[in-house]
Amino acid sequence: MDEMQIVAYQGEWRAGFQERVLAGYRAAGCSEPLARALLERAEKGIDGWTVATDGTGWAAVEVAEENGATVGRIHDLTAPQGRAWAERWCAEHGAQRAEVRLTGGDGAGLFADCPVRGQNRMRAVAERPELPAGLTVRRLTEEEYPGWYAGEEAAYIADIVRAGALTPAQAKEKSDRDFEKYLPQGYLTPGHAFYALEAEGRAIGTGWVNHGFLPGVTFGFSLEVYEEHRGKGYGRAAMAAGEWATRQGGDEAMMFNVFGGNEVAMSLYDNTGFAVLDEFRYIGL
Image (cartoon, rainbow, N blue to C red; front, side, top):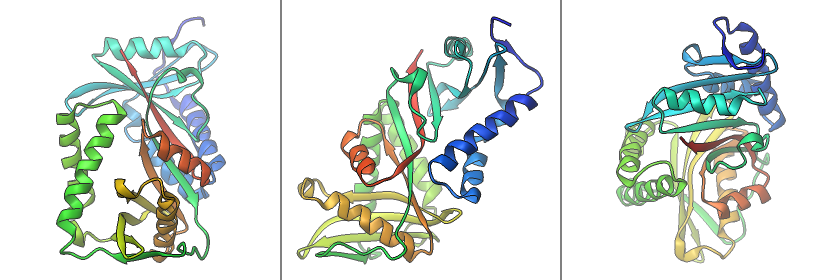
């Protein structure tokens, strides 16, 4: 078989796909329960994917409506010549762009020319993490929450736009949906904790975490150092605060997302040992 052909029976492909994804998560340091929980997320909607093979490898694709646009998704690609077919299939089904998910930080490979839209990162935290000298962490008060929320929303929208996938209006719509999803009860949403970071008697940033996001994992939605305090080493201090908060919530690992275009943050995470669980790149069609 020389050309990509769509297959009706996906059992052979699915078994290989699941093992490849699990192997990537294990290599990134995930426990078995966490690796399988992440696989479940990666397989969402799998019955609706289109799978093709050329006899040497596979491609799995779909199209979906996202923020008012038709987007192609390349979920799996092992066929050496499969990228051209996958992009053509997505375009033929109305997609204006395609997104590819790379599991386990396995390098960009065939997609090295495509911009990074975002990454999911994770690291096991110390058993008894200590806060850096001079850093104080306290719970944000309910009275402080509205001001924090406004700043957090503005920063989130800016991050989405900088990643290059959405317009400001689309980013605002996505922000509204995401905050409603994750904070349906605002300050009182169960499992979520909000922090103020202070040094030398001054507020230098904030933190927002979700305990029990996945088995043994706290998700760091935001560890923000205010712009006027950046470049002073507080970035590492904020990461230490996130690890401390993770243990406060009874979890063993910390996970978070970083948007594409934020090279400073990615460099910090590389230097502090946060492995890439998933990397998302996008292609204009």
